[in-house]
Structures are given as C-alpha cells and as structure tokens.
Length: 451
Image (cartoon, rainbow, N blue to C red):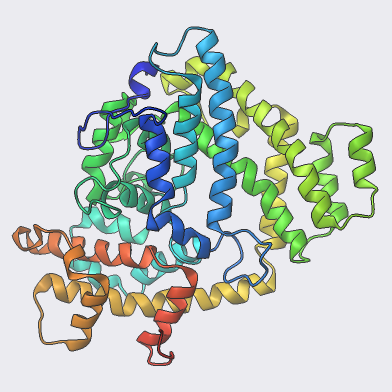
C-alpha cells in the first residue's frame, strides 16, 4: 500500500475532493460527522452503563469526543515523523493525518444500537429465536448480517447510506476517512468463518458491499482474500485511541459509581505513571478518588500515545504491506500493553458483571425484542405489499415511507424483504436508549403520550 493512495481526498461516489480556505477535505469530513443527527444522538446512548442517572458517567458521545482527541494527537505525531522522513505525498501535511484519524474516531461508534453491545447481542438473539422464520424469506448469503449484527457495519452503513443523502452515498466522506474507519474490512459471511482473525467482527453488511469495494479500491487497501482486505494503516490508530480511552475511562466510571476501589485501580495504573514528586503528592492527597483518577489520566494517556507512536513507526513497512498481526496495542511496550489488557480485564470482571448493570441489560433485551417484533413484521409486510394491517402501516409511517430504497418495487422479492429489514434496523440502531425504552412501551400499549 502507498500513502499517496491511502490518503485519497476523493469522496464516495467518485466525487472530486473539495478544499476550501482554512477547511481541507478532511476537516469537512470532521464537520459533516459532528453536525449529523446520528452523532448527536450518541449523547443518549450507552457507553457501559445503560440509562445511567449519574451525569459524570460517560456516554457514547463523550467517549467518542475523547477518543477523537487521542486519535488526532496520534495522527499528527506520526504524520510529523512520516513528513520528516519524506514518506508523505507533497500535497499532504502531518495535520491531515490527524484530521483523518480524528474524523474516523468521531464516527467509530456512530452505528451502535441503543444499549451498546447489549443491544447488538439482543438483535442477534432475536433473529436466532423469535425472528428466525424471517431468514427463510431472504438470500442465505445475507443471513449473517442479521445473526451476527454488528455495530461497526451499521456505522459504515450510516456513513455511506442512511445519513444525509439516503441511498446516494450518505455523508459522502473522503475515501481516506472511510478507509481509516474500516476496522474489519470484510463482509459478515467471512466473520462467521473459522479463519477470520476477529471472529464475528466485520465492517460492512452485504447491502453495503459496493461501498466497501469502492473505498478499498480507491485507497489501495491490499486484498487479503475474496472481498476482504488488509486494514488501512490509520485504522490501527483509530482502534488504539479507542482502546487507550475506554481502558482508562471504564475504570474512572467504575470509581464514580462505587463499583471499584481506588487502591486496586491505582495499583493497576502505577506501572505506567512517572515516579515524580507531583504524582506521589497527588496519590497521597485528600482529593476524592474521582479527581485523583482524572488528574492522573493525562499522564497515562500521554504514555499510551508515545507507545502507540513508537509501535506504529517500528512496524511501518509491515503496516503498508498488510502484514501486521493483531492490533497496535499488542506491539506496544509491555508496560502499556499490560496496562490496557489488565484494565479491560478489571472492567469485564468487576464493572460489567455488577448486578446493577446485569439488571439493566436484561431489561434492554426485552426492549429490543419488543421493538423488533413490531418493526420487522411491519417491514416484511411492506416488502410483500401487505396493505390490510393498519398497525403495520403506522409503523412504516413512523420509520418513514420515503426512507426505504427508491428502487424497492423493482427488486426481486427476497431482496425487497432484505432491504426493508435493513431499513428497519437503521431505524432501531439510530434510537437513543431513552427513545427505545419509550417506544417499546408504546408498542406494548403502556406508555404515556409524548409531547
């Protein structure tokens, strides 16, 4: 792979790049994402704790903003190094890499359904159980899109199809930003194969196959098999920024909600902290533990950024050759690598399994199931031309009749059903936790009117 092509400023749909004074094509990507409704709704979507009432706990929006800050710094620092070595194209600046990574980081969770990963699991479980009979109506090649529903793929669909210009290339972002966004550049059927490097993970539904192929071709992402590709090198930075942030932030949220104790969190963080008087005084101060963690966060993230930069540059040639195994964290210095892994383990075992979170996740499954019962039944009826069910008509009105593919009537029946199911999932995935809970009550006839 070559940087000249990887940093392609052209836009999806083979549209030319458009730079303005003080606003490059990549900054335009950043602005399009920031101003989108899909991004704004992340403010009321679960990061870890569904429907959290504590205002200090992170949601998907605050998490995405923090990840974008870390990603921007990683991109600029690496861009500086590449520029000094003469490896960047003459029309690309180091800050352009920061803008690309920042934009991809802002969008990295934009397709997550309500209740986060619990919502993903609930959708998969519904199609394996109550919704299994709908699979008989669509092409078997599309089954894994539903049985392995993935927020990353929904995010790519949001960026390229369902936000702004419906079915006309979505946000029309640059190829470079979309390439950096593709964490798992293959379709769902490969995610189900035993040789998939990230089992059950993928970045594009079959409905969005053409956009995936267009992005990979335009950026020169190296083929790794039939319709799967090596990652864009900047995708490693997006993933690393995400890992650095949620490994630390999940522990902060655990402290804030009294699910973790300061001594155990500090013991985990201390190997990566500098042994200075400032740090020692802070650790032994009388500040509440939430403030201690916040003040130490910057020092931890700085250590992580330095490690990520070193790992990327050390493996630069392998990254361009598409030959790096695992994520960038696994190639960082041991102190940082172990910090991230240990933080993830602590969050999994002590935060994610807390009874309060488990109770809310059980409720989330019921909410998602209730919504899918109504949405998918109505969507399939719409695809098959059933007109005598008034409830279904009203659900289609709620989704938006004009939001279904314009060529729907010309498609074969199995494709119509599939496209309508995907449109219903667009609607569901775009909901906030609060709206999903409210609408599930409405579907069950138990909610109060909304004004």
